[in-house]
Image (cartoon, rainbow, N blue to C red; front, side, top):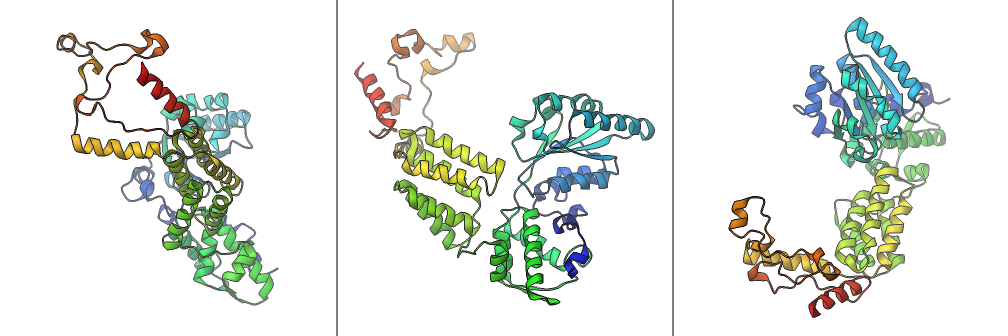
Length: 434
């Protein structure tokens, strides 16, 4: 048994969980001085809240700290392993506590999105009565996964993935902490080794500390010495991930995303997938890549293939819900689809054209016949007069002007003959003939 094993059998990530609000990194918008959660926790007047954020962003940590700061009875409850029966037991204990101490109980529900509607309904009366203060944690959009009555009684607070600086600070804290971390070991670690650990952690503090612990175990077993030296090669070997030349804030970042974008635009599926994985393996933010694909779907594919935008959006949401490594292939699926899709930048050109026209001609008045007329005065001055309701005509269409008078003959959107835009172009031309 080595010295690290003697320290504790508890994982490093759990030992290094922040024990005060000032130790929590990366969520200053919630717990910075004067911010709403900071003030609520410090005052002890806490409210029901649902923390929505990616794995390792601090949802569980914040929930536990709220319990520590407020000194309220605290029950942790997992939606994965527990059900309504266990919930009823917690509620009964909360009633006893409320009767004896006159205090509510904090009920922390991890992965609250795993509960179905009926199970979530079970919380409602007790949240409403003030018997429990609900703290939920979820990696998925609460708007879709949490019932509306519960959402209306709790504040949703969004947590962000941790940045490189925050992850480095967490790693250095673990390396220097002699009581809970690795400070009792004589560890010399190279900056590039820490950079690689961070790049392999996807903004997740727990993964970063697990990676660090794995590397230290690996080097301890290999070097058989009290003084541990960790370089980039050690980290690459321990994590089975080779570091790639990449600077997420520098030229290589922009070169790679440019190559990816141009490969998609050039309909080269092989190169698109190559540049995608070059960025992923180098530690690029997958959601940044996802956002670029969403923009690409509208800018370079457009209505030549209306499904492209749906697929890009689905890939982005899949990463939010699953994360690595499962969602990597979903991004690859989207990249291959976008590359193979017919291309059109007609909407992008329309966007530029219409912005230029609005800038040039200013705010042109809305034609009278298109204006709504909710009052008699508006009707008397001509609002809505002469408007023809398309559904009253054959094929649901009638010729009438919709653009302001001074720009009536301008054409902004010119669909191509590629993909579905061929059909759109045909429809436009047919309407011109009538």
